[in-house]
Length: 504
Picture 1 (cartoon, rainbow, N blue to C red):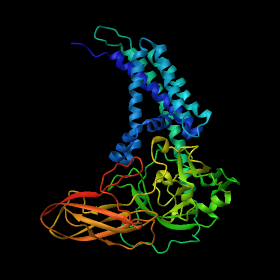
Picture 2 (picture 1 turned 90 degrees about the horizontal axis):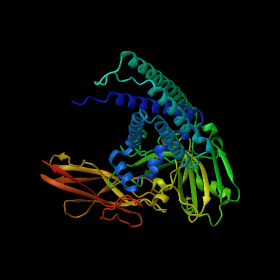
Picture 3 (picture 1 turned 135 degrees about the vertical axis):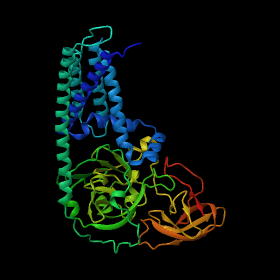
């Protein structure tokens, strides 16, 4: 019987420990320099950027907001495999294995420097990772237990020597990682304290009484989040600045106090992600507090040929919004509050952009720090470069929330209910079809604005057996959502939300 090659296993462990130590030191350096310089975040972002759109859409559809933790776990697993392989290689070709760790550091540096807004010193943590991992690998492999017999058994003294070396490497990695973790916890706590210290002034234009129908407002902890940020930016409102520049007569820089002092508006607005499938969950309604964008842009003096406003996030994300959309009278804003409190950290604190009637990728930049007036012909924003449409008006849509798909309901009167939306235009009618019967109008709950969804309900007299329910919406311009199913790419999904239920 062939025995397990224990020296190879031990060498693989040495490779993994060297990699862990290198990453821990890199994360500590990134905490000191800039969180965006983390090689893990850089490589993860590069993977996101390189992932084909259909794969991204499948990930969003399948795992939702768990896509980022799964991606980071996948990167960790891949690093362990590569590091273990380099450890085994190092038993015979140590220099080559050490060079392999150097290459990994260069890959991390290249990924970080490829991010929008990257700075040259952002490469330092990745390079440190390679410089630390390579000598640690040599240190461990020189202390590998020597084989003493054909059974591949090592002397106890040799095993102790390796275990001590491995323990030292692991201890150093834990110490560096622990310091980095504490530093990031303190940074996160600082961001949270900054948010808690804010006292938002009352709006000069309040939204009016809150809608009292259950389910109209989406609880903040249930509000969808779809973005590419692998870690949530933790910003201090006192240090936040917004630049308005580009094709303007008078560039402007505002701080958070300037924004609060301009007079806030309060509006109920429904947001929708372009990745939302027919009947999907990536839509929500909240009461927002913010500053109208149009006056800010007009004060800056927008050039006649500036047909695009490029918004930039602190992490370099870019969104492109038609300038005309922001100046046409809609309540496009720089939001500072959500449901009566400062924005949550993961929804854009301290300031995010909102553009009613556009999908989020074209008008709702989180953690915003720049507004650049530009031309569509000169610059493509992040998602446009990946094939998504430049113009992204929200399409009319309706969803059935009750009963649930494949539900069993008793015969007799059954309440069918849901929501419909066409932000910027408003919903004119919603119709329900049972099996292949006629389309029947449903009751619409009143709503105060065309920028929110409409809740609807219908009393259905259900007979025993299996049934199919379909719903469709018509907006105030007379546009009815089409029956044909189209995937979200490149400008939003279409089709009637359809589900099956059993009555009995």
